Length: 439
Ligand code: ADP
Ligand code: MG
Image: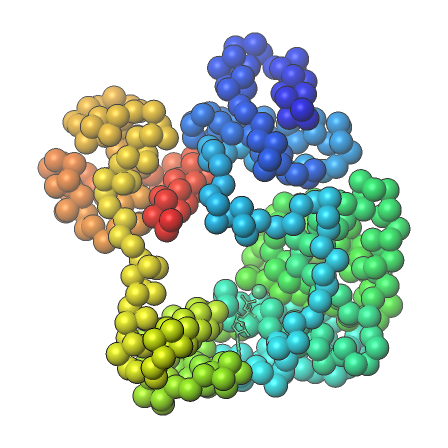
């Protein structure tokens, strides 16, 4: 197997003691690995982080030497993806999605305009009317579920009938497509497709971060289209400057045209969006209920839509009208699901498990360095994930008062700033605890 072969190669190049202690315990996860993404499972976070820090670059090079494909090496402690995740899994690399389809319901007509998105909407509309002529590229950024993808498709829909060649792809599809054609030695087809279209719509460009090979390819794609006066539209969750791991030359190009942001919708816009979605889905809602939902929902419009569909499903099921009571219940249920409580015990357990110590040791008064460190991490995580105050945490750990807690917080923050590897470890723990909680 590829993974084992690479490990063998690495073994030849590193001190034996490191191999015995760390590398030997890695398992290659064949199922989850792809041609440009290798996954190794480490027995615990400590080993994972150590390998990541010391050898992920080397591993990546070894893969590239072997396969000729730039490979991202992931070292994880997660054994198996959950079933849910498997179902959501992106198509495999050997079947690149040619689906550059435009969603026909994401049109300008179906987009509700308010002051939060007016600027982005107007810019997108002008670009749709005069592709390649007004702002090139158009770069739209904003938070999740605020309508970026919708606007991209709207530009596509607007131009569909004008017999223009339009490509919509997420940057991940672009990357998969690229890797696939590299492997098949059909890169010319890839270039023909992406460099010869009239309008290129690329979604979630932030995922270019750190992908050097793809950045290089995208750079040339961009230049060729731009020189030919073809329209490029990009979306992201951040303005170009803020995307870490993105080459300067790309950042500066992304700023050549117009940058438009989308803000979370204000109440009125939320109300109008709910009404629009009801109309599109043939759902009847009293104004009172619409107002209630708008006032009590998050700004993520995807979630608003989810609530409306759920309401409709319930009411169809029991064959009754959607009442205020039902609306309140569904909304509360949704909120409960979102914020299932995370307990201190859970945090202690996860940290203890990852650092290979006993939960009881974390709660003990031991001054052992490793245990002090683990305790600090728990405190930091608890402050970030639970509503516990500093005094209540001090009490939990039997500390004198809250100053010991704030000292622990300070230490963790300092270390995170100094040591990138430690920061990764903390981020992973945060992720792990949140994730364990949402299942
Ligand atoms: P993003 O790409 O910013 O994460 P999407 O474009 O996928 O968000 O939008 C999420 C959902 O919300 C989509 O179903 C979209 O139609 C809807 N939506 C977002 N903004 C609006 C809006 N202003 N008017 C109507 N629907 C919207
Ligand atoms: Mg999107």
